[in-house]
Image: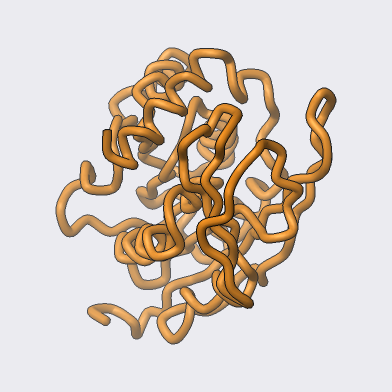
Length: 232
């Protein structure tokens, strides 16, 4: 299977097993809603890339964002549609190529989604998502951070100062998958001349609940596409 199909299959298994079913939204959701409000795009159409089974999607929509939910996991989309049947028509099984060609959005949200694959692929995912953003729109990102205590057996396939770390999992729910952990300068370098920083990049650390151990670190940041960046 392709890397995309492998990721989709892994998440199908996770969602079928109840992953995130009872988890509250991450606190970052409140910052996204506040930033969209300040930017004047709260009620404009947006897209949540990797919406999953709705852990954060539902809270974002309840907060006023009008989001298309997009996910490569069919199991996730089915569960989310059952949870919010009134928004079933706004949920899409697929990646960003499933969106209408040339469409742009007032808000683009990617939480824990731009980290599948090698470094170059992850960067390409972020850059492709940026092209969905209308001038003046808000983009919110949450990705794996270096410094995470990687829980399962793995092999390092890429590393470099300021360039993050890529591993291939040898055990666990993501066995066989490549997953990238970003360095802060690496992530920020993807948001340069076309963007203004709305919420400076910060690290959110979460202690794993037993039987897990250690902590999981995530970079969070919000950027606004400059209005004079149209067509660049």
